[in-house]
Image (cartoon, rainbow, N blue to C red; front, side, top):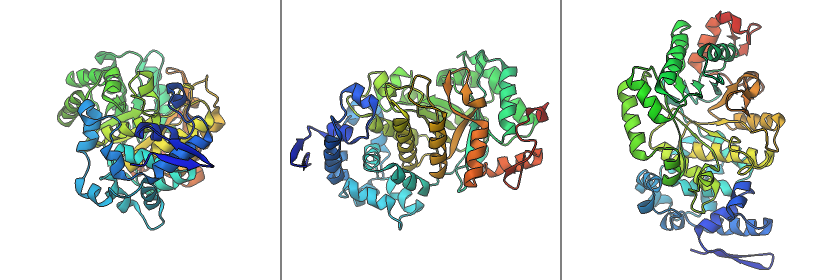
Length: 453
């Protein structure tokens, strides 16, 4: 494995794969905070040059976090189709990138080779792509999943309605929910982040959302984004849960910081098969975000893009209905400004799609970042053009419970209108029945929650 190159008369010798991967990244404040980033653009170019010439076998044969030391690595390894891997193992990273971006390579060809790729190989290609490359590659891949309804079809932009409330007041949640529905938002999921992480509170919210779905015959799915163990207790107490939620990290140690491991996820998966209320077969909702492993000191000097890709390698095991990166939620320590947030959102979406996942994005930021709502408009429209499965809708783009900024209900309606995208087909039929949408366009009553009163 060659780890040396010369750029403009200066020779660069990299110690190992971790250093090559980290220094080939586009600039990220998280990598700088970890002390693993390239010192300047010339060193970054050198690392990219070395990375481009590595073979896929080089990456697999030199694990950055060996399977015998980490269960996420084991899950990724066990998921590889060895026959497909044997066909492509001598490709360079550059050749894999070119294959994915080729005009002759379509969705089915990309999906086939993806089964022979580790998460680290997928991360490697992202480091060699421009933003437009990431959009172009992701737009080719259509990952369709079904819970109570299907999303991910060509021309469809679904949305999670996120009617959070600062005290989990079910009437307050319901009011925000009705506003979101009135804008045509909610086909991906009715998903609430709870303040109170108890099974009783989770059960109350799940029952309320299920009652709303039943009363108005809404074709969607519900979820409360509590810890997986809390949701499991609520389900065992009879709560009607269509989706099971959990945040993921890219290392076993990082997942322990979230209070989970593979055995627990397996137990939750079994519970949902037996007692979940959706038709399936996809009934998981996972969230990720660059930098979480660094915040829990569980990154092992591996860069945040590669660690993020490993989250998707773990998620792939469970065939989820939806996955999203909460791209700007953790803060400027990991993604400093709008340039870094936009880049990360496009990287995460592409890497998730190449893993075969139904990838979405919470197009968001915290108020102490060098980002504003115009930046989120930019990222939102770029992701919609890239074929993102879903985005998040929050009243007025301001989550009053989690205290961060996301995309509003009307922002998502605008994304659909500008790019000629539609809600999920079953949900659109319901919107037409309610008079909210007609021929793919919102009607004059759209945005009026009193239609549900």
